[in-house]
Image (cartoon, rainbow, N blue to C red; front, side, top):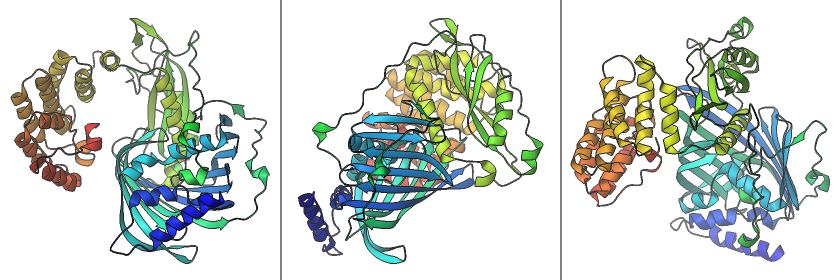
Length: 563
């Protein structure tokens, strides 16, 4: 370890003496940042993180803290708190790694202590390789930590799409302050757009973390790195390799454990799913639409205290469409029982597999919202640890019962049934896009035409109908070989007045991207110019794409190929 430490420190010294005009290579900084803590016999610090989640104009701030203690090589302990609640504890004794969730009273064991902890650490934050590949050193700056100034290099990384704790972060911008002398990240910020979870509408995420109380080479008792399961805890593979509950934003792979050469990295075997027993679900269809829905009763005591929010419920639907079971995953505790009681009375259309009705999982969100009052962290009851645990639960269910594009389309059509008015109009954009993905072009054309016919009928979002209806028409034309018609449809899509998602996340660029490959530069440029009228938040991105196309290139549309 001493030779490795000397090499790391010599490189850090060299980087420190780079002139202001010659900023050091960002990838080199990040590579050595991931190994800097290995130069110490032991280290410990507390990382404080504040996450701001903005949903439909309402912001909630969530504090988190992560205490890290480690002895090199490979012994480490990480305790994560969300507010005052310990959401997860991760321990590596050098041979095995353990993750324990006090909230769920569950723990997991992973073989290969340092490898397992490294895997969990990298999953919790980001793809480190992707971050380094997109990094640039932008300046030198001083940061104050615990009352002392630290000269830092500032590195910026942009990532179009990544997974974090079961959710998807899009258009992420990471800014990292790396201490010039220590080579350690002292501060990191991230901004991005969050997809997934029970939040309705566009969701923005801003996070800032800072390391405090840094200590090096102090003796730490080995008992810190020994895991003894609590008597009431249950061993499970629920958290295995998933990044865990309440994952800390600012952790780095080097802060978890010393990495080994690639050939030694081995992931633990993945348990094969068991065949469902009688009465167990055999399918998962997210957010089925109830055909009968009883409103939940808002407890007067909670309303009087200003307690509001949303309760996410995992629902089991039986072959008759009745609710066999309902389990609250997130939301204010006082509102969970009323939400579950209401959902148990709901009725759904049966879920079909191979022509027969089966037990199936779905999700439901029950709202207790007073729009006349501001939403605060206390009133909303947002708990990041629980949100991430819920997303992990849903992700595992989804992985067990994956759906092909054709099955997604069939489920949507079954769920649509004989709906009319706004309910049908609300489903049509998803139906039209699903039909294209499934290769059912005739159906896609019919659904797109029906979607466009809803404009002005007062049933839904006219701006989205105009854009998505024409976009799907264009994709059908393109798949059928009619490039000129597809280009015309793209321009018609750009004439939309906008909508909630179009105005915030921006339009889907699949048709524009495919038309560029067919040489339709002028049509795509006209479309992007039209988009400026409604996507004002993305004006700089649109300008950048326009510049690339005019220069003869093809832009990286990133997350806008997914919306």
